[in-house]
Length: 505
Image (tube, rainbow, N blue to C red):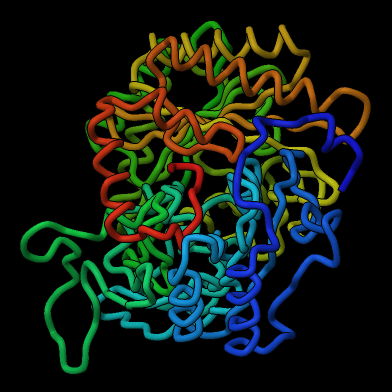
């Protein structure tokens, strides 16, 4: 870990000090279940903050009692049962592939946890192209599932992150893909409860079962309880697979900053009237640079898919509407199809991603991050802030002012991408890149703190938290009684705290 990590301390989390007799007994038993080669223990007190390696955000490295690496879902059940026996056995912090970049990577929210690394659970257990679902384990990456679906009638809802990121992990943290929110992809979950019992909630395939995929079932649905949750450990998920479109094209628009509010309201009308599908995106100049945007200008990507005829018609309507508005300095719907266009390769990769094919070579990811996926945590400096905005020009302009104020106060370069999740909601993805030198990390963390405060004051709450801002759940709760209800459920299901408090505790 870089020495800088000690200079960017967040709140010091409290947790049980490693080394209790009950914890040692649980780890010894875990070694018998998994094999000692799958149990990583710190050699001494100094090693407790080094077991997980660096994290790209330079959040304070938590003390970790051990890392456990099960190979099967059955082993997960045995491990959870071991840590459920006594209050002093320790608590399990589950990760998938550990690439939760910008929010903590592999780090638990509190000290003293035992990290349960589920990356070895990497099977695609079942796949039904006719019904449109796959059963995948936490270690299955979006790149792997997409390769399995290549040249089929179905596709995965991929993100613009690296191909080696987990589908299940991102969905459980309410990540957003290019086809929509990934929570909407979850049809069923296999969950190990405290005590070791395995249950399947939502919809699950069975031998001879012909019922259509319907995650809600009868009566109260338990599926949402395990999203952003420490009520159980998810060992597999049924992921819905959208139909692959026959044709797809992305219309690219550019516009100057003063037109931001008016453009936002114009694009909102197009989204509301069904002229674009999937998740259209608006980029500020810093974010748009990676996608070939003109210097100093904002950019818009409007995906259209369907039959060849419908794509041609809707693309023509969009470009005609854009020209009539007089708001845009660039209007193009041919970059991906025309190799002569200056941004042909970038647009082709974007169109492929909207069609369910992630950039397996991580070309765009490397352009944005400056390094490959295997070096993000060790070489890149990166933070995320993820608020939700109303889809109005006024709200977007207000958010842009708050971002510029934070940048001016701290000297940190921010970039913002707006994911348009229907006609009323925007997921605002704010990225902060910083070098591992001087006081850059401290200034980036200062900017992050300012954004949490200023956006909360404006009523723009985050929908995902990083490890140093877990307390924001209480501060931003619509109803404190609702938060208390989930904690009562935790006390009933997990009285010995076998599963660690997380970022949404």
